[in-house]
Image (cartoon, rainbow, N blue to C red; front, side):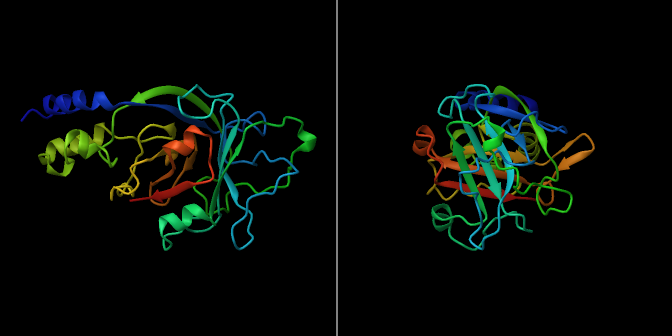
Length: 260
C-alpha cells in the first residue's frame, strides 16, 4: 500500500467537510492595551461589574480574552465585543472531573466565560486590581502573550468525533496509514472555531453532544523562551451549542482539557 496515495484519497473526501477558523499565534510580549486579544495578563474588567469567582469565593484568573473588533470575521461568531475565558488557579486548572457535564455547564465553579458586547476604553472605569497568571501559578500559562491572528480552513481531525462518519474509523486503517493520518491531519494549535484537538478522546463521542462546536482552543506550545503547557503537553477546549453561539449567548459553555 502506498500510504501517501491512500492518505490523499482520504484528504480528498475530508475536503468536503472543511471548517473555517481563526488561527491564534501567541507572542511573548504584552498586549498594548488591557482590552486587546491576549493569553494571560490582567483581564479587562469594568469596575461596576462583579468579577467572576469560584463557588468557594476564589477569584478566577484570566486564561484568554478575544477582542472580535481586532480579529478576522468568522461566520456565526461575534463580530465585535470582547470574549473572556477564566479558570481557577488550582492543580486541575479549574476542571471538575467528578460532576456530570450537564450540571457543570449549568453552574460552573472553576471556570467562566464572559462576553462584553461593548468595550469600555476609559481606563479610569476599569479595575486594575484583578489576579493574573504568574510563575508560581498552577495555570498552563505564567505570563501575558499578545495575539496575532489569521483566517484559515481545516479538514476534520481524526480525534474529532465526526471523523469516523466522514472517513471511517482511523483505528481500522492499516497501522502505517493510521499513523500518517494522525500525524498529518491533526487539529493542533490555538484557535477560534474549526475542529478540536485532543490528546485522549473527544468527550462528545457518545452522540449526546453533537450540537456542541468548538468555541476556543488553547494548545500547548513553546513561545520563544516560554511555554504554554497543559499538564503533559495537553490541550484545553471550550465548546458551545450552535444555537447559543449564533445568539452570542455564552451562558452555557463546556470546558475540557486533557493531556498525554
